Image (cartoon, rainbow, N blue to C red):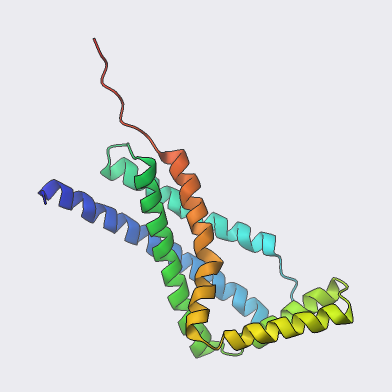
Length: 188
């Protein structure tokens, strides 16, 4: 490989790791805050719209990672494919850090989280006027989920599914916005 190509690959890796790790740390902090809010108060009223909005804002770092890569390593031009690849890799690195941090936090510090989360979910549907049958069904659903959550591979899969799809969507949208073809030389 040529020295120039190796330099570009290393610059891309550094950019992906830098933005991915920052993204992962912020995602993890956000997750810790949410978990601790539920652990401290299972009667808390959760807001999924707010939660996903916060994650979209956090994942907006992907936009800045792609832009940084385009402007600093690719002289201001990037194809849709390269932009999406960089964005998806940033999302993957960030999501992986989030998953690893959650595994450590869950197993070492809050192994009773699912009990509190189940209580929070049941309190929420009760507040919303659920019938006894709906509460019983949701309790059974949460019990089955807790049973599956005993498997660390399931925990990993669910944790990735919480964040990675959002990251990939943000990566695609960012790529569509940031793609830029090289300027054609003027024909005289």
